[in-house]
Image (cartoon, rainbow, N blue to C red):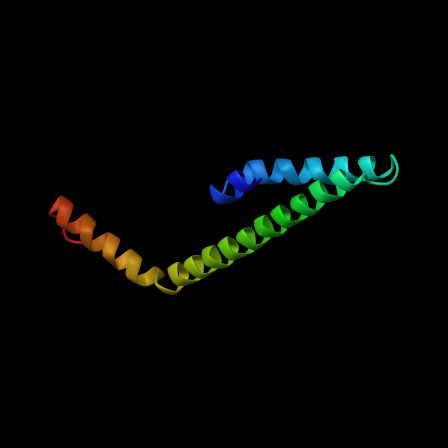
Length: 92
């Protein structure tokens, strides 16, 4: 999970999340957790929290970027038209 988080591998994180959601309840239904299982679960919980925070941060940054793009849409269009005109030599 840490490698998927570090590389922003959203497909892998989604697959891991789905696997956890289906596996953990089944494992818990088998009886009390052993000390080793509790330790592994605590580590998994920490990794999951880190992945969640990374996802939230990335989502926030993407939202800011999209908002900035929307706010500057007219400028981008004017820039694109100017470059097209310069490349083709024809007036816009």
